[in-house]
Length: 332
Image (cartoon, rainbow, N blue to C red; front, side):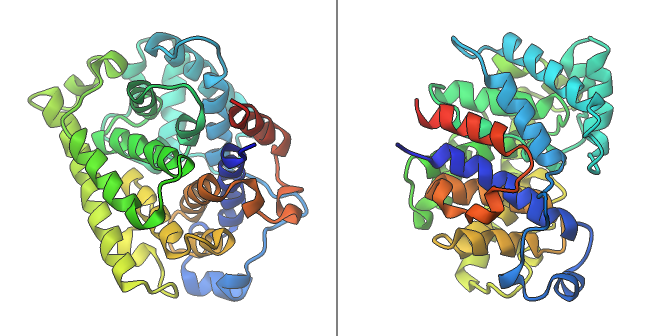
């Protein structure tokens, strides 16, 4: 039986835990604290996740339903899960201010678009989207619309929507067997094909809040930013300098398209060495936990659960829930 969903979820959480202590500090300081990046070890004895994995689990729980995924039902379940996260005693892992602000408005019960921070494209839009790339049985429209909707509940900037969609698509492609050497090209094709596709069934009138002339103009802005970062990924892969800080090539990852681009770069530098990809992503000068979480999701979707050292997964916080979701999706 496949273990790709399990591997992706474990990789996301392991990258999150590995990168959490190195977030907010530069690479020389990381090396001084942790030693050579190729030998970085998972902190312990309990490998603690951050809000990145907490919110990915919230999305996974919102997907735990039978029948066809539809916008209204998915939105209501996402809202409930996000508000539960807002009040969780475990929500003390440096959560993003945009997510906190939006979730407080969601709790008030008004239209979800009122909560969406329309100018924000923070990486919170796509750090949690991996389950949409893994859950079986979705149509392309459901996966894309669901990915953008879960982003839009908190981060309404079109680049946040597009990057979340592209992140879920990356996970899906890798789980389906796409080879790393053609991955960036297939992502670029997907971005061009969807550049003016506004998923009104999922997003409603969100676009009207941004001041664009049309929904197509609105969403195209987001896809153009994703296409630009894919160009930077291509250039960095051609240079292939694994010792250089990936953030110098593709951005620090605080915003959605850069988190995707830098995570993708780390994966493509080490497509067949998942632990090294994770370590490289955690040793970065930017949003290291989010970058490493996405790099781990990509590597796990390619290699499966066997990619990760058992001594690491054995002490991973929320391991049982991650394994339960992975096993259920792998079995379908």
